[in-house]
Amino acid sequence: LMSRPLLLLCLFVQYCACFTNAAPEYNHTQAVELYLYSKISACEAKAIEQWTCVLCDKFPNFEVKGVYNPKSVDSQALVGYDRDTHRIVAAFRGSKNEKNVLTDLDFKKIPYIDSLCNDCEVHRGFLLEWQSYRAHVLADIHALMATHPNASIILTGHSMGGAVALLAALDCVKEGVAVDNLSVYTYGEPRVANRA
Image 1 (cartoon, rainbow, N blue to C red):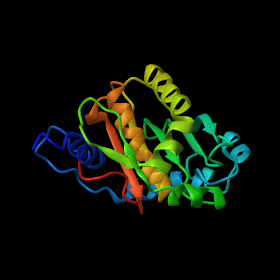
Image 2: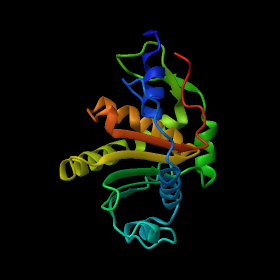
Image 3: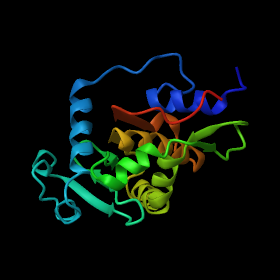
């Protein structure tokens, strides 16, 4: 059983049941809200920063901490705090342009360096995507955790954004985010890693 710790960690984090016997209950309202956040992550960066994109009015008390769109991958993510639901949200955009499609197609498996898992490999394109804004996203999540210590943390994304959300969750856990306070909601997430 322990020969596949990364796979187990992924499953536990993704389904919010790490170290418990209870499976999480599906919350339709929350699933729809988080899908909307993943859609918002595809809006123009300036509209997200000013919280004026067409879907932003669904969350009138959301405070944007950061919008990240590194040129190297031509993608986008956002982090912020929702005062109404008392949660920190990181949303990752799915494929939207030719560069993103090339990231999707960069599916060569490369080693995932982690002391808990030997022979673990991940999709190169998704890992490089995550690494392009990892430092900023994690720094802003930690800053919001310091300001809102009892807030839940939710990572979400559609398609490629879902794959990146899963990789982000692994790094959050490695950086000390309590697993029982972390949720991952993905929509159409492709396979991210091997079976190791």
